[in-house]
Amino acid sequence: MATTPLQTLFRPHKMGHLTVPNRVFMAPLTRNRAHDDGTPWSTTATYYAQRASAGLLISEATQINPLGKGYIKTPGIYADSHVEGWKAITDAVHAAGGRIYCQLWHVGRIRHVDIEPKGEQPVAPSAIRANAKTFTHDGFADVSEPRALSLDEIDQIVEDFAHATRCAMAAGFDGVEVHSANGYLLDQFLHSASNRRDDEYGGSIENRSRMTLRVVDRIVQEIGSDRVGIRLSPLGEANDVQEDDPTAIFSYLVAELDKRELAYLHFVESFAGADRSNENAEVLKSIRQHWNGFYVANGAYDAEYAAKYVDEGWCHAVAVGRDFLANPDLPSRWLTGAELNAPDQDTFYGGGEEGYTDYPFATLGR
Ligand code: 8OZ
Image (tube, rainbow, N blue to C red; front, side, top):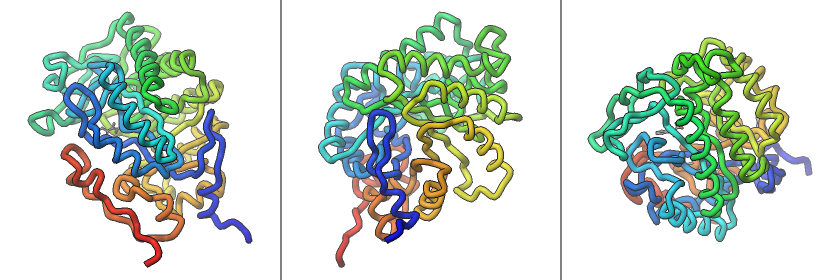
């Protein structure tokens, strides 16, 4: 019998040091349920283990150091209590047959001074405040004015990424994903709107790409390239980092990343759904062609689009956010055509088990 496009999603594939059993990945999703010190909540083990049938789970964005935190109740991966907390989670995922990467995050200027460590100004490539908001203990608020990082501080952040990587490995993660997307620190270096530096980190495309590549190289030095993925948002304008010519910088960056032979490249392809009948599709195509390895696409893919684009060779896997959040058994629902639970926006960020671990599995055979 010929394979249907949908069955293509369930063909195993080598990805770095792993073989993933299917191409339906869980996208990184901020859920704001960690303790204030960054230790993940114990129930988070249940949440991820419920979703262990993903080809790969990518953890929610996890800060690499104290100033890397920009929102309330996001988890960290730099202190002993973080490692212990995450160890219980990765153990639960592995016991359920899954695989999980840790998404390493520094928010840069997307931070408010009321977030722990309280009173500390955000750090950024340049002292340019973002037109963006974050969640604080008092609700949604404009981000604070940042200060520009010194060269020594940049070196320290690179080392903090390396330290967080060691912590992630000690916590039992299968690898790490570098968060260089969505207007956070590494993405702030990439864009001239947020990077006005006149040293080797600003100006030319090579200079603006330097921080992301340094972080990647330092992490690879720590754990090897086959446990390292990276997320970019070449078309993204989230958190005030619009770009006039994304093709130029992202083509260079992706070609450089390609030389590193990382486990995967992950793009936030668009925020508007998987319909690519627009000019952005051409931009994305011209950037994506510089990558020869495993490619993970994210952006409102449903079963039909995922099957089509994996089958056609555009991507090796899709990372799914909302539908995975609401459907712990999403891969099998896609395979069987079962109806999907609808995601509840009100419980995305913060709260308890409601909208977290209580989405039902599909009942089969009825
Ligand atoms: C939603 C809310 C807070 C953070 C991202 C880490 O966009 C995030 C994020 C998303 O990458």
